[in-house]
Length: 284
Image (cartoon, rainbow, N blue to C red; front, top):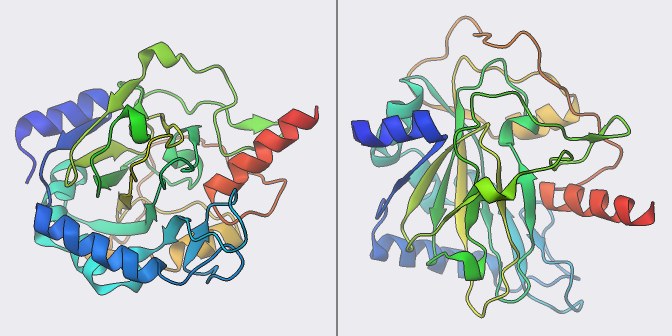
């Protein structure tokens, strides 16, 4: 359970940190599962429904960029996502009725791990209210050198930043970002970061010789109902499920309006959307 100081930090800054949420033994068990899941996959031959490869490698390259929905597909990750230890922390921040929204595991392999550009999570999955957060659990020691998370504190209660160019959603903030306000969130393996869905964040490429694997779980209050975006909503909601409390009989609205993304390209992940956006900019 998060104590009152952590809850107040989250409310003030849009994020809070819990050291040693999981033990070294638990980290080792997760990493053993990750190695088993990734084994045998190459850029040329891999299961595109379960994982995404780093694009800048030879066809026989084995560097994985992301695992999709580990907390749906793999028992140890699913048990953690629904554990009392974790859900008690989420309840302290969001209340008693909780949906697991989605999960992923970003790999950031040494010397090649991809950049994630500035964005706010809620821009990608509009809801009827803002009571949603991501839990980022470092499975390796994370610092600036291997591409730790960076956030801009205190912006979670403000308006959504701009994401469009020519009317199309780019998957990244397209207005100027004051990076002097950014705070790197470093931590040992087992550290968890609880981050509000409106907190701007980024992570640099991993240019070190160390991996930076991070398990990411998104939760929302059960009365935060997705705004319908056709196949995008259908895809995200396919694995969403109630993990604590009850499903309310009504949706709760706290915003009078919210931008709906309109996409120019088809893409498999935010990584790909941001890459397509950068490539489009370079052609101008």
